Length: 572
Image (cartoon, rainbow, N blue to C red; front, side, top):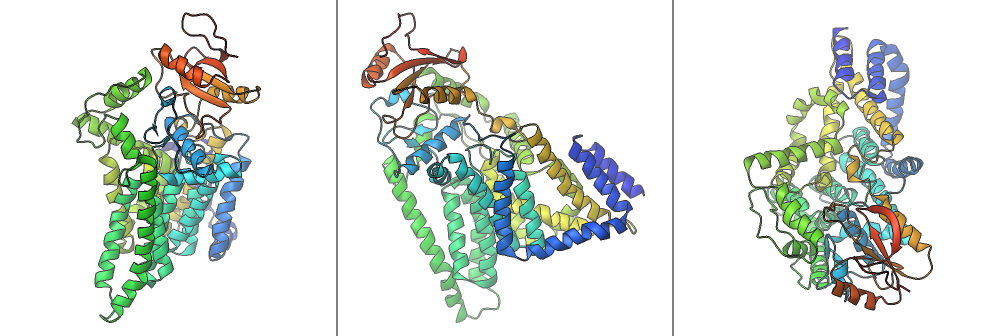
């Protein structure tokens, strides 16, 4: 009884007091006090799920369908997301470009008026981001809306994480891990409710972890192909983090190829060919494709679009030990405020600043990947650290975490390749936890169930309150720009919207973003610059109605354009 009271107190007082917490505490106490009830109900349910998990293809399809169905059911509380950050707009530009059958776009003659964040304008007009996330968004755009691509990729991630975990543990535990991922990331997560990405890189990480384990067990060519495909996805979604993530897998595979136990000298070359040949073919195709994409976008096969954008605009440090570069001169005040002020002020290479940004990363990762109920799994964690089978996953987690720590800028989806590894270690902790008991009471079993219940109730609470993520700032976009675009979409003719910012404008609230084909767009957004540039712009778009928006004054009001201090222009 003492153990029961301690466990209940831990559940009640260590976590935020939501309805889910109280329900989980009730489940914990009920199952610990009434083992007969447990045998007659929970055991039957767990047994059915364990048998179901052995139907692996059905499980993967079920996880895929669950995520889609659950998220669509939540649409009344969590509507289709609206772009709200620089990154999302840039990814949507990439998607629109690919959906129109192009890798990039020619530079626009009036590009200075359209210059915006995270977009390259010379030698071509393109997003600075790698293409993988753009591919899934483009698929969604072709199907009707870019968010459909987000929905499909998030659902596919959950099915593939089950496949990957299945290489490391029995199917019933792999099913548990994938189900936890589906609940955590499939409904109220910014991976689902924005266009930043996360699921695509997590798919790449899952393919690598699942395939490398299978390659070492069976040496099948198809697993080598899947390993190469996972590496290709990582290289085209999170290149830096994917490279760091792949280091342990590459070393493990190399050691296995050299020292493979139980293989004679005559058999080893054949085994190596079965693995290395398909893997190298996939990697060679990937490298050639990336070089071609870089050449088309930046004019140099070895310069990625992100590298070009960094050299063109950014002056802030990239790694913790670096100092900022000299300030640059920009063509508009918003760029000056963002690159010369905000980015540079956000970090200086001091010990205090290093500690501060590291704590921010830790907190962001905790909120995105974990939930309060996992405190109950802590008793099982020390046993995981001693599991020889999971040392590779721990090494992958440690190496990738170091790679994330040493960079200045980091968002939780930067760690997306680690999703499968993190949840493998969580599930293994729960497995050890379930074996723990106090006298005749299987407290560990009750705690393990409470962990899942707390997660489900936390997600339910987020959906009920309309929160798109535990940190809503990651996915709540300003709908004012969207509402203005919708208003103009229903007006006849084509339109040019001049965006006028105040001196103290919030640099994160950007309105100047355009589609891939600017000239063909019904609505074009331009930055109000000097009178000469504006006149040239009006002359170029002489057939458009010209409007003015002032996001810092009244972000819902649209009026015919007037230059500062001059009479109304004839915009017909």
